[in-house]
Structure formats: structure tokens, C-alpha cells
Length: 177
Image 1 (cartoon, rainbow, N blue to C red):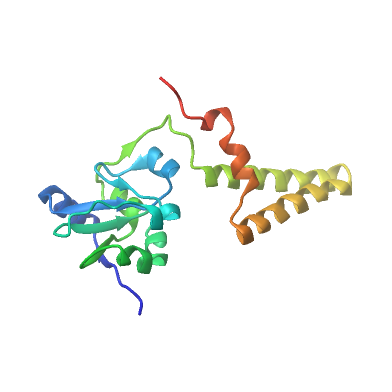
Image 2 (tube, rainbow, N blue to C red):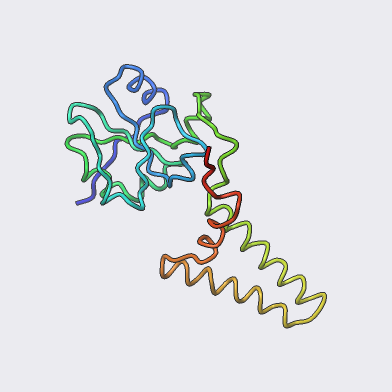
């Protein structure tokens, strides 16, 4: 049986949050949450969902959100299984919330999401390999093939070496005060 998360518009979610009888659970990764989130939302990344300790009041509505609504839709069974009673989803996610003109907490100093960094780095290397392959020597096409193979491996195995390397970059390190 497939669980259903009942969709709520951004304005309905805001009403429930303001009334104090709902909690918003953001299932995006911690780096995404740090950069942009809805004030008062709890960060519970989907990648650690089964290990997460959700301290939720059974009498409180639980509303899940992500960036666009795609992750919540794809994981509705996993999400709803952890909630007693009815579960909800912010229709359109954080993007719809912002589109409705509702306030967002933004930390411009937080690093860009690691997967966006991977996409930029991988895309740049593939483009560089192709350009150098056409302009300098065909051996440079191997760079594009290597990066493409790495992306396939990351998709199949769940391990992304490029993401691990980028996490070590100075701009991604946690700042100590």
C-alpha cells in the first residue's frame, strides 16, 4: 500500500505553523538546509531518515518539505511511516514557499550545496575534456570519459569521490569561532 502525504499550499502551511499546531520537517541534506530554509523548520535529512530521532508530539500536524516537492513525493512511504496519524507535505516545497513571498532564512556565507558543486565541477571537466580533445589532441577526450565513468559509478554505488574531495575544500570546512 502506498502512503499519501496530503498536500498543503504554502499559505495553509504558514497558517498551521503560526497557530502552533504544526511542525515543519525539512528532509533536505544539512548543507542545503544551512544555505536556505523556512524559519522554525526542523532539519531531518532523508539520507539519515531511519536513524533520525523525531521528537514529534502525536497531537501536532507533521508537514514535510524539500526544495521542490520531488523528494517528499518520492519518499512519501518512508516519511508517512514515521508519523502517527495524518501526514502533510508543503506543495511545491521551499521554492513554492519563496514564490508565495513568504520569508526564508538565508545564509549567503554557507557553502553552495555539495551536489551543485559536483555538477559544476563535473560539467566543467567534461566540457574541458571535449574542448581540449577537439582543439589540442584526441587523448583529452579521456578526461570526459573518466568523469562520466565516475558519475555512473557514483549513481550505481552511492559513493561520489568528487563530493568527498569537494567536502575537503577550504570553502566547505566548518568555520570555528
